Image (cartoon, rainbow, N blue to C red; front, side, top):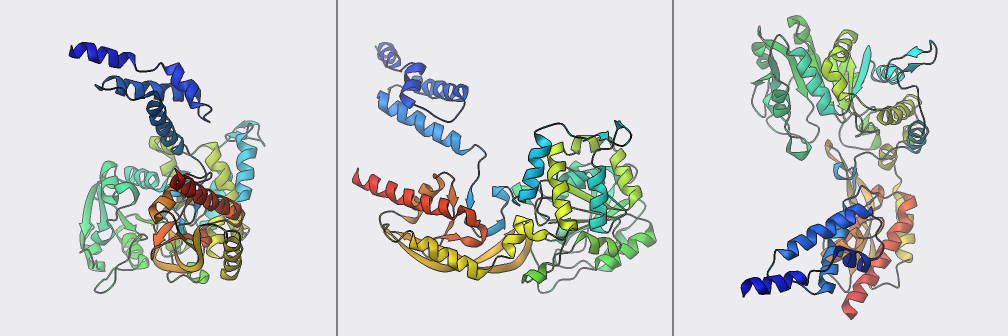
Length: 462
């Protein structure tokens, strides 16, 4: 009897084509939609009861909406975090986008020498430009800063295996990855020195031995320590490393090329040029943070070390493609031409509060008739991207209190807009920070808020 009931229930499961017809148009590839329908119907068949057809269609529609939301797409960043790792870090400059289209849409001289008519060197122009920008003898590029660190560690630990590093610099980066684990995965042994809060010059001096491959200094870019703390300067460590004939490498992380305190920030972020001038043999940093370019790991320093890294077989596995080179080339040119105001991450840091306040007033004026309370508020922007953890910048926010739904529901509706608009909740208000919203996105913000209010009214009427 049970089997008969189960059999009748299965016969009620609709055909894939019937569900597909009921869904209407979706801007997803048809094979993906069909595969999802089949998987959902398979789950339903395994259950003792089959839902009504309309419920099945609603279930599939919800799953399709989730799938579509996971596609890479633009978002409006109203969070007040400029280099937002979850949002792709640094936005690219318009000039970089034009270069990307020019290079990506046709053939290029990626590894072709236009002078000799023979095979050329990948990235020769960019490496020369980066070396000049960093005040280095030479430079090269891999696909991210972690890859740069792995390449450096693998090269220098072929004969000697120990990496000397301060316990106060054993940082954890995004996604739960830790510097120590990355180093060990590259085949090195950690020689941790000092305490969490205090590492002295003598700690470094005593740690260097016959098995020391290099000294690594990791900039504490995503946190800070205060109080009873101590660490020797880079110049002092470099002098010791030179005396002991041990390479000294600095992982700077964020890739600042300018004096960050000149933007009104509370901290100075060390630059590659400063680290190399202090005596570091190599530095590495990210291309998609304060540098303002694509994801890349940039290595700069002494020519003989950079050349040796490029001879490593692992270098080929970690190298960048033509699209990264195209965007990075354009970004480097902007830095060398002192046109950093054209780099979005830097331009956002330089934004005028008066201009933001005028934009806020215009946006608020366009939303007066909606069932929400709108106010112009204040924000405290973070640089983000693991840089300048003590620094904030004042900003202007649009503060929203919806009358017919919760703040959480209102946030959900804005995330469902096209493009998604993402803010944060503070002081019992939903806030959108205008320092991280581009002026050309203001219309999209207004449209999203209107749509969220309309959806709220419609749901209450149902």
